[in-house]
Length: 142
Image (cartoon, rainbow, N blue to C red; front, side, top):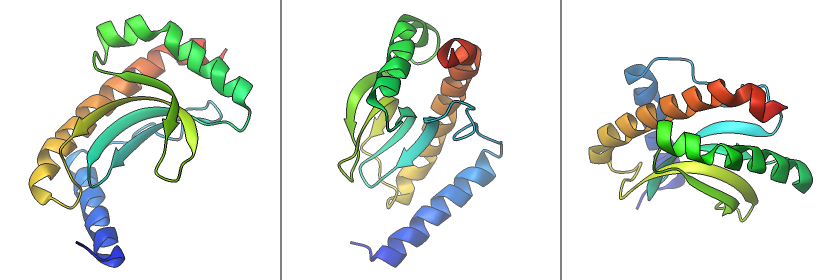
């Protein structure tokens, strides 16, 4: 078990290492679509790469989720065959949002032996997710 400060230090070390190993500018929050972001997540249980849809207005959230759902066959066949669509994804703080994600389980940010595998996963999957997003961004934003 790690203290909060030890855990924070380990997290910082992972993300610094990831940035050095895969030095590029990721799209992430700079999607140019309000309330739609691409995210990396790495916890003590799993790693995820996701598109999060989280506006305050549920109608707008449903609109964007429907747009992504209409592209489901394309994203699965051409980009990420194992992507999960979840319009009721619950975060650790109990917030509910819409999330499209791919996940790597049985890894932990506290286990440095899983870092290399996780870094490869995050780089590969986010590259494909960004490629998909940029290809269909105009359609999604209309």
